[in-house]
Length: 418
Image (tube, rainbow, N blue to C red):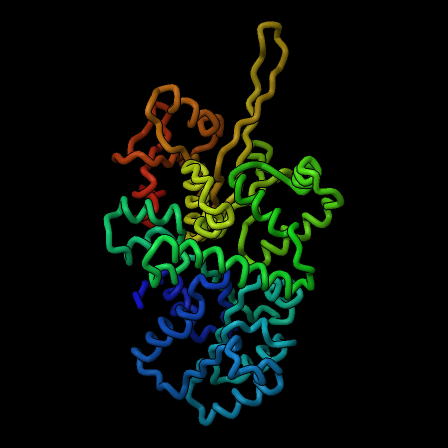
C-alpha cells in the first residue's frame, strides 16, 4: 500500500496534542481520517517514545467491536485499560455509531491523564447542541480528500499526467491501490451507492427512492452554477416528476451537506458588505465522486477546475464565498444602469482577503478583459487573482491583476502571497 503524507492534518494533530480538548476529526467517508489517526499519528506518538499500551485504538465500525457501541460498555472498557498515571491517548474511530457519546467523551476527557481523539463522518454530530455538551472542550480538525499537492506527491508520472488523472478520478486515497480505469470508475460508483447513499438513508430514516439520486445528479451537472431548492423543484416538474417540494429538496441537500459530500457557498455583496440569501452555489468535496455520478460524461474542464480550486482554498483554511459586485453607469439619456459582476471566490483568513477568478486561459486581450472585469470593479486594496490552466510564469495585467497557473497555485501552499 502506498504511503501518502498528510502533513497538513498530521501537524494539526501534533499541535493540538494534550490541549485538554477532545480532538474531533471530521470528513467524508474514505477520505483518510482513520489512516491519519490510527497510522500516521500513531507512528508519530511511537516515534516520540509513547508506549504501545498507552495508545488505546478502537474502530467502532468493526463488527468485532459491536458491543462497544453501548457508551457504558465502551467507557468501562477504556477505563480498565488505564493502569497508571502515565498519559493515555484514546483513539475512537466513527464515534457517531455510539449512542449518546457526548457524556462519554466528556467523562473520558475529565480524566487527568487522557488525551481523547475521535473521528466521524457526519457533521450532525458536531451540531450546536453537541458542541454545547462539550462545553468548549471540543476541537475540530476537518480532513478532506487528497488535494492535488498530496496526490501528485504519490503519483508516479509527470505533473501534467497527475493533473489529467486527478481531474477525472479525484483524490480518494484508496484509488492508489487500483490499477485500471475500470477499477477506479467502479470504486467511485460503488462508494456512492453502497456507502454515501446508504449512510444518508440510514441516518435520516429515508425510503430509498430516486429523488436523492436525482438531486445529486442535477447538482453534479451544474457545479459552479447558481441554484436553489425552488429552481430545482421547477426542474423536477419540467422533467415530469410531480410532488417534489422545495422543502423536500432543501432537506435532501442538507443531508448531502451533513455527509460532507457537497458544500454550499453563499453569495456576498462586496460593496454592500452583506450576504445574499439566494441563490447559492454547490461544489463537491471530491471531483472524482462528482464525475462518477455523471458516468464520467460531463468533463467540462473549466467547471471541474473551479471545483478543484474551491476545495484547495478550503484545505488552506480560508473562508470562501461567491462575490457579487454592483457597478453603476449611465446611458446616453442619463438613466442609471445597474449591472452585477460575479467574483468566483472571495476568500478570507484573519486579516487577509483574496478575490479569485478561475479561467481556463487568457489567450486573447478580449478574454483577459472579460475575466478581470469583475475584479477591477472591487475598490479595495486586497489582492485580485486569476487562476488559469495554461502554463507560464506569474504575471500581472495592466490593471494590476495577478495571473497564476493552476498547477503552480495548487503545488505551492503559499502561492496566493507570491
